[in-house]
Length: 73
Image 1 (spheres, rainbow, N blue to C red):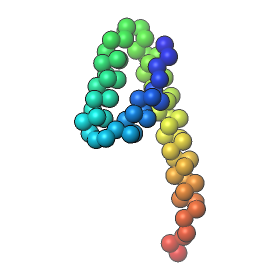
Image 2: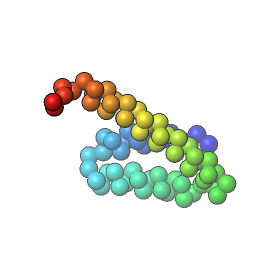
Image 3: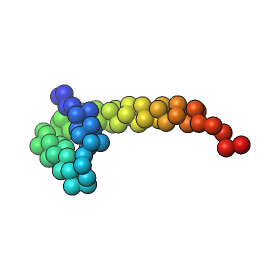
């Protein structure tokens, strides 16, 4: 199984509003629901891995920006 999590992630980030984000979320839920039971654990593992990588990337950028800010002291 090769699901393109990044494609959905980028679409959600660029969504015009809550309704569009909800529609994207529903697409993912519908996709998951149609998966055979034996493929769901692999999908969940791949999703968790993607989310960890994305959160790590975001934290790295945040830490870099934070380190460049002048001190409040």
